[in-house]
Length: 88
Image (cartoon, rainbow, N blue to C red):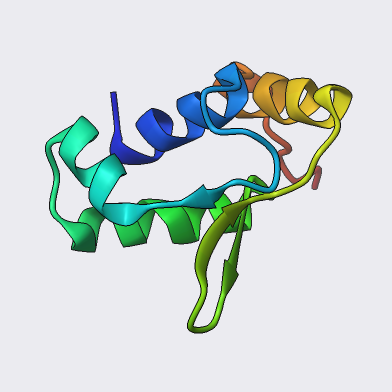
């Protein structure tokens, strides 16, 4: 499991609630990683719409509906052949 899947999995499973502040020290301890890879994973999750990163406040779980979360989960776990390819 990658670092972003670990944090992302906690969001999708509901372990981290909508709007909840992500405490880096707690997540680092839980995943057994330092802050650098966690911050990289949080930036990736921000790009996927699961996390908001606020200056001087840290990361928050994006306030998405359950339907939004399930759609993102489906997209993130779609087989690679489902990804868009250019048609020439």
